[in-house]
Image 1 (tube, rainbow, N blue to C red):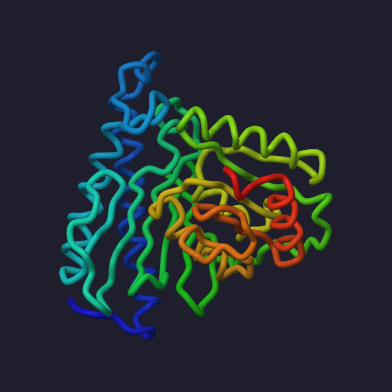
Image 2: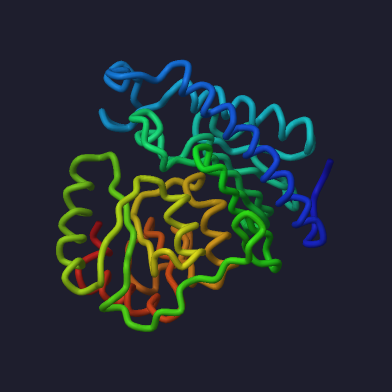
Length: 279
């Protein structure tokens, strides 16, 4: 199957949902089999001692790649565990896959983790799905067609006052950068309504889409962390500034921000004023 045009985005969304649902079932089955008390200490790590990788990550990505190859044999995949299997040609679909977003939560038995699958062409997001294995919730979007949660149309927060906004964020794995991120959060916290830290960027972005939080920001996320969730937030009406965008707000070249339109500019102003560009 070859290049895709905008008429096919709903098909891509359906594929993302189907494959993410299958991977979500596998993620729970693997966790039930291998994760138990004390098992986190024995897990291998990647970028730091807190950046764990599990058997579930590896098995789920393998399954996702197999299913995408069967359903979309002409496409390419970029995955967290397996990297890029090929550089996409112009007009070719690339799937950006996080087999388990929120691996630390997953390994500790917490319910806030998800399978995230996004589809893009020439760097333009076209469709995506985020599926929560524990709750079974399915978030999805196709560009130009809106975003939904289990079939219900999503709308981002209509709040217009940044000082009372509830803002989600995350912390990176590198200890020195984590220190700077925590310092930024400490400066920001008194000037907003409240803070949430769930440990799963894809679900933070979905929470923006649902209006459960008014905004979200984080530095240092990888492409697979936000490929699906950022599109879902955008299609729900949120203002989204992706890490690969230009940086007129001076938030830092790898900053992601997603917020309801009434608080996005104010949140960006606060982040810039408190040194986000130096994170």
